[in-house]
Length: 299
Image 1 (cartoon, rainbow, N blue to C red):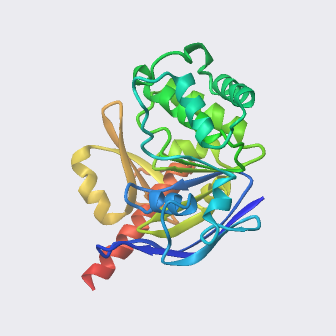
Image 2 (image 1 turned 30 degrees about the vertical axis):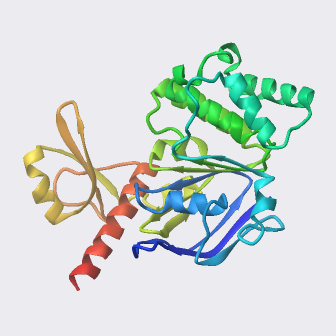
């Protein structure tokens, strides 16, 4: 099972280059697409989901040419968009039954069985008769996954699924996605590093419509080993250290600011070595791209 994206580009009518020559190979399991808001993640997800056309390039899922045969792809596709709307005055059971009918599960007894199994799988069975308008954000996302699973898809796309969820709901959602990923390709599009580090065995970082970095999270983390340095400073000193070092992030801890620098050797001062995390990889790549963009615009 494989999804192959080759040289896909998309420019909107207003001139924004949303995707620029994107190429990725995605295998079975969880794949994380990490990037800032506006990086092009949702455009790529909508293109794979056949909701919009690409200007050029190709997408192949197993033996299906996605852009040329959208109806074939939709038979094996489950999609949870960034904003999943629900009818507030309809119960979860009624709505999922209606959606199952729309997706072609015509036999009444089969439809009933599928709906009941899915509501149990996403842990909504006990509140199946409750109106969707009364659901929390996490419950709505779990219902969204249930509708995405109606046709037993082999390719599932979830776009920013944990944004706005509290830690408990996010953990439930992590567990659900992990269970589903054993025999499917699941693409998780997010700007939350924790989503990728927790769930994904492969990933890519996207920015300004381009693939900036891709690979396995643990290998990407190793690329910064011996190059990360941390120091606790007064916040008034930040500008000074930014002039002298490549500072990729700063955060407050117990009222003090901690900065992280990237350097092949120990910077001046009381910096100490820091073990790399996926968040450091992400911040480093974004910082490098910001510098390149600034150099281009100032040239």
